[in-house]
View 1 (tube, helix red, strand yellow):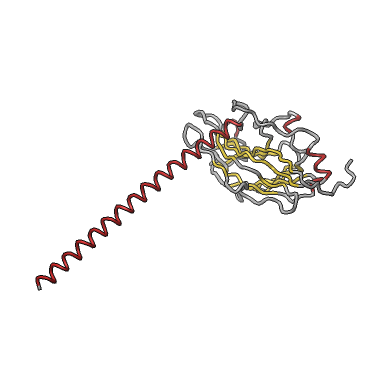
View 2: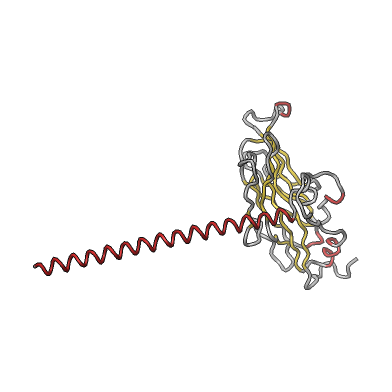
Length: 267
């Protein structure tokens, strides 16, 4: 038991990775109930999970409740009780619908943390945008699209990787984001909580079960490098085009001046 649970441990920073996003499948007739609106076409689940257990489940190592107290999902206002508070694992909400929209996800920490909650955002994805992975995006400022808690040891968001897994025809559509909750100078009590079990170790390669891996991050860096190179080439072409236009404009100006001088000499 810590001697002073609320005292912050200086010079310590601990990160805990999470995976949040959604999985969606076409809504089957057998899954519809009397309460299901007739225009609903998909069944979906939005979640916050351990990166090593993206499919959820009851494995003890997939339980994030040792440091997460609850998760509040804010759905579209057209849903009954759009704010869904999930206070025990699995931290997820399953619904049906027909449209895509932004979902606010607010994560609250256990009392030992003595931290403010943080908010992230996820755009619900129901439809595949092509047969391959959607180009992943890394949020350059390191924030998960929302606000991290204020304070010296706030659970802040680390690097964010946003990706979608390949979609088979008729298969589930998956959209997920890897993020890290960083606890800077945690309280003694929270440090004890966080070190009570090891954090998730990111696998080297992706598999059917593992959605995020070091391979995913490497591929994302390659995509970013390729995109930056394309932007650079386009900028160079634009500069060359501008230089050409300026040169033509100067040439026309000189020709016009010559014509004016010739006309003056004739007079």
